[in-house]
Image 1 (spheres, rainbow, N blue to C red):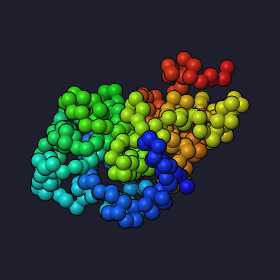
Image 2 (tube, rainbow, N blue to C red):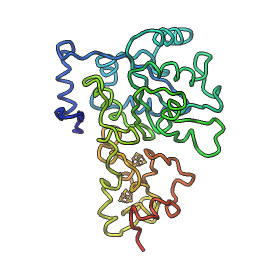
Image 3 (cartoon, helix red, strand yellow):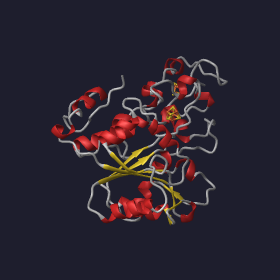
Image 4 (cartoon, rainbow, N blue to C red):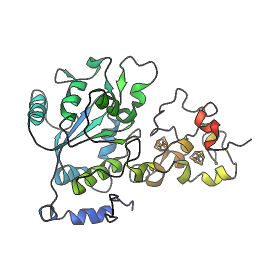
Amino acid sequence: MYQLVIAAGAAPLLSFDELLAAEANPSSAGWSRPDLVWLQGAGCSGCSTSFLNVEQITILDFLTYFTRLLYHPNLSSTTGEQVPQILNKLAASNKAYILIMEGAIPVAMPHACMMADLPIGDWVGRLASKASICIAAGTCAASGGVSKMAGTLTGAAALDDFLRQRGIKTPLVNLPACPMHPEHLVYTLLHFIKSKSLPDLDDARRPRQFFTHSVHERCPRYPAFQARDFAQRIGEEGCLLDLGCQGPVTYNDCVAIGYCGNTNNCVRAGHPCIGCAGELFPRPRLYHTHDDPKIKTGIIVKKS
Ligand code: SF4
Ligand code: SF4
């Protein structure tokens, strides 16, 4: 089973089962359940769908036993005038809460994403400034992703850029991938709930234990890469580099943990990595390899 790791300082390494056992008596364990507010900007709701697929605990148990879900656009029964009432009340209070942002923020076209008659950016600014932590769920929130592709008129901004433009210094965690991996979010939330601190983050504010290794390093097709056995068509055996695989320049543990309970992952299924967790995603030509400067400059050596 995939191990959920508590990485802060000398904290022990715990499996998810151990975490659940430790949580059996929350009051004696001294944990508190934080309120969660989930907002959606310019995106596709795919990260919300991915979140529902977390395998180590039922989503219902996670949202009711470990946290309190105050608002989610798709999961909450709250609608209409109740939404701004709840969120305004929260923003005016001194309650601790966690803000999860899915999707980019359309700063050049604020009315492209509205919630309760206000641009989503207004809500993000209001709620992020008082949150305990902010989490950018998925590549659109972490770096712009599909919402920020060349040619967009919305001025879609990543959460990090948006917060910096407004001088909001709330601690931020980026969880890129398209869609975000549900275990990355559950891990981050449990880490914060248990330790009141963020997991160890890299320069891009991603948890190191998930984003230190490239897809390439752990790829089941790596022996074929070493043997210079390159597939030339989808469906062939061999390394997928010549089909545009971005595994060598994309950092994510998706190959190790898979999606949907490790049912599968991109390269195992025979599809080149399209770099969904990278800052350059999506490239204008998803399957084009040879013009990629990172690959050309020798991060990997292509076959002659
Ligand atoms: S280039 Fe892609 S398919 Fe080939 S070994 Fe690396 S990650 Fe795997
Ligand atoms: S293999 Fe690449 S495209 Fe697929 S999930 Fe991992 S980082 Fe994203």
